[in-house]
Length: 386
Length: 140
Image (cartoon, rainbow over all chains, first blue to last red; front, top):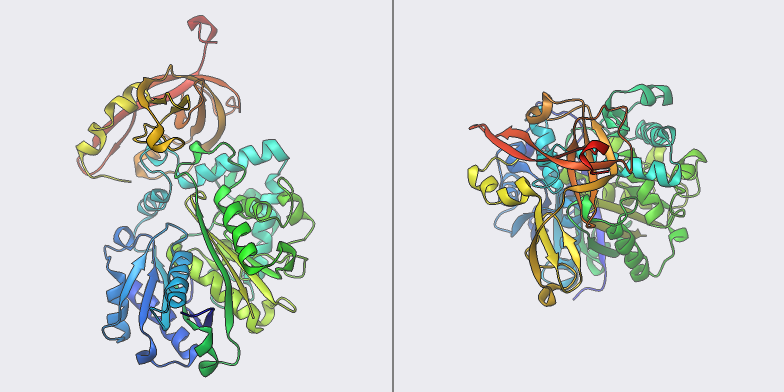
């Protein structure tokens, strides 16, 4: 049994519309970079977990664990994928964390991957909506953006959150992504452009929504005892916590809050022995900008209802008191669904190592990721430290 | 979109044609969509079939302007969470209502409509949509 788990290597493929690369190729790319970064050998790795939501629908291929092991030449090691909708990547990290803590595995490769551009936009929208309660929401015409519009409209009514505040989240995350070499959109976008972008489902506009993306992210994780064999700058997982909520949004008493985020973040902080003010940088799940606002409140950076004001006042800017999504977040880095939860951890590991270059937040000691699935039916929170 | 065939629809025809859900007599909670187990009482729960009156109010809504092919012909359309008078909430389209007129807390009643067609065989889905109540029908 190990007492602690370390991240000793990180890797990313470029995020974006990668027409010339297959799902297996981008997964391999992220995995190889992570292995090179960790300076482990392929034969040192004794298990592989891959986070993926819907390769079967997006590409026609499942059984990704065996495929990744095969393509990587990793031999006969155990390999499998895990699915928790948009939280599949976070679930993969958590599975590896538990496998290493238990002593069953020693050094593991964790991947998150999604290839969304092999289907047309209609099919992509259909596939994304299976993350919600498809039979009772999607089938009745509630697209995925419509479900987030449900939350946004209530949040606007109950707390006075504005369209401008939702748009400022986009502006901030695009600004941060300029310095992220893997980001899908490495360019700033002015507020007026966001406010005038096309409507997906009022009040949610195209530029309030994360894009359709291809991409993969990878981590090499091992027991803390062995981490120093490979690196001088290991990053430690201080806590991993997961919670669930009703699958359908209409079954929740309050749709301005995500109960699973509240409980999993509280629990993670408790396990890590930290308070929210001790966290120096956050990666929060901004699949739509309203979700960044809601999560900012639910984890306690600000009180319920003040998430909109927080973005207005610059609290979550890279040089603010609680920097959120220095990477550009899902909005600007891109949101290849299964890759996102792993990419969040990659970014936080780089921030903790001081390797985040021009998007580096000063003096990062502790970091937190919140990765949600569907409309918040799954929440996976990780707290990392140096 | 799921498109696994006619049985996937057929087995829930009662629920979506008549808004039939469940009432737990242990905790007096109404459920829609139907449940197999009362999530609050679990093994102590007693679920009985219950047909909702089909009256409620809009809890929240969105105007859908980009939709997959199965709904493309209907855009822009209103989709909402309707809070039924018995307490359960469901997701449905709002019809017979201009997109400028819909608002939170608007009183609505159910109506029977074609929802969509899906799958390669074009299975037609009928079920509930909601429309604003009118004084003349006595539903106000």
